[in-house]
Length: 137
Ligand code: HEC
View 1 (tube, rainbow, N blue to C red):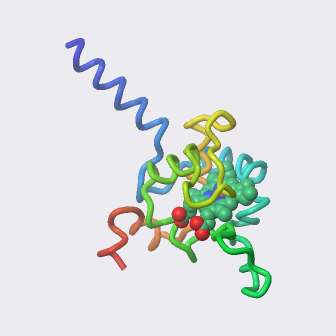
View 2: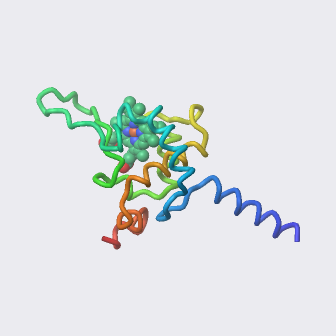
View 3: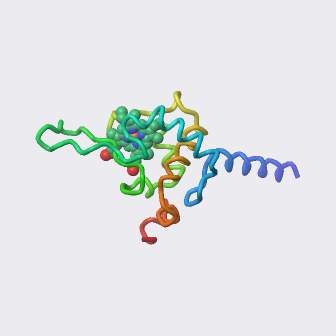
């Protein structure tokens, strides 16, 4: 009985914190995520997640990575919600330009931002999000 209760609570918590890969997020989480995105992410990933312009090869510093689009034109949708939240909170090893946002953003805020990012994708792309992307398209 007590065990079932604990399982139910854990399920509820995981559902409210983690958005669901492949599912449309709620309007509320998208709106919350959009405000956070504008504040913390848009300077690099740009309005509507279109990403930075490529740097012309002649002036490009070796190893400098531009912020890729987070809309459906790049591969953000190849990652599950959990992987995106993880990338946001812990940053990316491959470039110091994408820092760890842990300490600035909570896990819930990171998943709200993921909800906003997902709102930029079409139904077709959303349905193929994450591990399914290899076989789906
Ligand atoms: C100072 C610039 C900068 C800021 C601010 C920034 N990013 Fe990034 N981001 C980058 C760069 C650079 C990369 C890596 C590009 C690459 O690997 O080619 C990246 C990569 C990512 C990726 C990996 C995408 C993929 O397809 O693998 C995600 C997700 C991401 N950023 C989300 C965010 C979010 C959410 C925020 C705001 C909380 C944010 N970024 C803020 C520069 C930035």
